[in-house]
Image 1 (cartoon, rainbow, N blue to C red):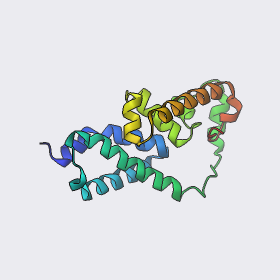
Image 2 (cartoon, rainbow, N blue to C red; image 1 turned 135 degrees about the vertical axis):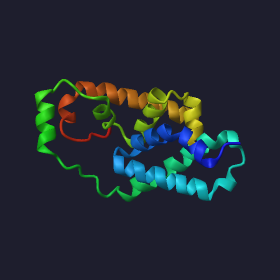
Image 3 (cartoon, helix red, strand yellow; image 1 turned 90 degrees about the vertical axis):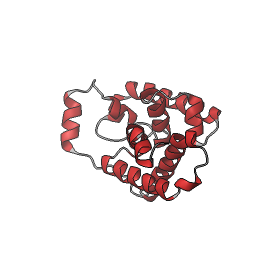
Image 4 (spheres, helix red, strand yellow; image 1 turned 30 degrees about the vertical axis):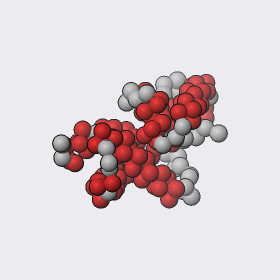
Length: 165
């Protein structure tokens, strides 16, 4: 049986990707992962099946991220930086994956990151997030559609965050 620390280290990259996909802020990601690991350590006795450790840890992390998102909900304004606008204007046709993902809501961004960047199957994602498989499929389809629309609506992307409607 592995130690708690060894198990956590094995999923370090996954935890960061999940938290980033929901929070999109490096400092918040670090805080969320730390809080999730603290909660996991405190509740480690509640884990009945060692094989479910990864799913259990991701569930704790998504709960922490959702708590953080609820707390910052009232601060939805995004400051517009002139240097960002100048950079985007000089290369209007080029958008990074990160910029494209910023156009998605946190729940859609999380599905995309888990499926395409981490390689999880929809069924596994649904289990991790404690949602029905159909909901996971719908979110992934909606995210794909939003990403497709974002590539054609470049003017909406320049200099800010554009959560899909």
